[in-house]
Amino acid sequence: MNATRFDQLIDRRATASEKWEKYADSEILPMWVADTDFMAPQPVIDALHQRIDHGVFGYTCTPAELNRLVIERMQRLYHWTINVDDLVWLPGLVCGLNLACRSVGDSGSAVVTPAPVYPPFMSAPRLSDRSLVKVPLQRDDTGRSVIDLDALEAAITPDAKLLLFCNPHNPGGTLYRREELEALAEIIIRHDLIICSDEIHCDLILEPGLSHTPIAALGDAIAARTITLMAPSKTYNIAGLGCSFAIIQNPELRRRFQRVRKGIVPDVNLLGYTAALAAYRDGDEWNRAQLNYLRGNRDYLVTAINAIPGLKLDPIEATYLAWIDVSAARLENPPHFFEQAGVGLSPGRDFGDDRFMRLNFGCPRALLEQAVDRMRRALLNELPA
Image (tube, rainbow, N blue to C red; front, side, top):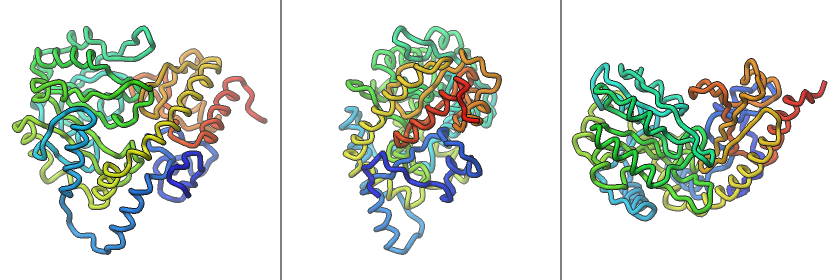
C-alpha cells in the first residue's frame, strides 16, 4: 500500500467502518458519510506506529509542539495572529457546535443557521434548549449557494444570540469570499451576535486561485465575537481518532465555552493528538497531492452528473462532497431509489432539502465511476435484469 496512491482500492469491510458497515450485507457502494477511502499520510501512520511502540498509554495533555504548529499555521496561511490561550482542544467538531449553543444566550434563546446545512447545525440548538431559526441559502449568478444576507437580517430578533456558520459550506462546497465575509461580519457586529464558524473543510479548497479566509481573521471586532472550529480530521482522513479544536480569542466567551464542557466533554485521546501533530507538521505535501486527485474527481463528476437526465450539479469550490439536485427526476423516494441502484448517498432531507442528495467523491476514481454508472443506468431504466 502506498499512502500517495489515491486510486488504490482499499478494502474497508470488516474494519468497523461506519461508512462501509451501513451496507455490509449488500453490494451498495457507500458514498455518504464524510470520510474518504484514502490512506492517511505516511508521516501520520509512522507517528502512530512510533507512539504505539512506546507501549504506555496513560492520561495525556496537549503537546506543546502541536499548539505551536497550529499557531504558526494560522499565521502562515491566513496572517491571523492567535496565542496558545485561544486554543480549546476537543474530541470532535460536533461537540463544539453543541458547546457553542450552550455557552451563548440562555434557555429559549434563538440560534440562527443557514439551510440546507450539515445536520448537527439543526440538532445542536434543540439539544441545548434553544430555538432554531433557519435562513435560506440563495444561488448567485455563477451557481454558488451563499447565505441570503437580507433574509438573515429579517430573521434576527431580540432573542437571537448566536449564528452557526459553515465555511466552506457543507453541503455544496461554497467558499465564501472576503467581501462576503466582511458583509456578514458587519451584520453580526451590528446586531450584537456571536458567530460559531465551522471551518473544518478549510484545507480542502479545490478551485485554483481561491483561498480560505477565517471570518475571525478579518479584525479584532469580529474576532471578539467568534468561535472558530477547525480540525485535521477531514483533510487527512483521521476522523476516527477524534481531534479538533476551537479558537476563541474573547476570554469571557472562552471561559463560558470551557465551563459548559466541564465534566461532560472528555479530553482528546493521545493517538488523536499524535496524528494531528504529524499531519500538521508533515502532511501538507500529501494534501497537495490529494487535492489534485480530488480536483480530477470533481471535474469528472460535474461533467458526468450533468449528462444524466434528471440530475444537476453546480460547481464545487471546496470539500469532497457533491450536492446533487435530483428534483427533475421526480423520484418518490430518492434515497431508496439510489440504494436500489446500488449507491448509498446522504439524503438531502437530513440537511433540510429533500430535492437533493449528497455524494462523497473522496474515493478512488474507479469506485466513483462505478457509482455514477449505476445512477445513470437506474435513471435511464438500464439496470440489468
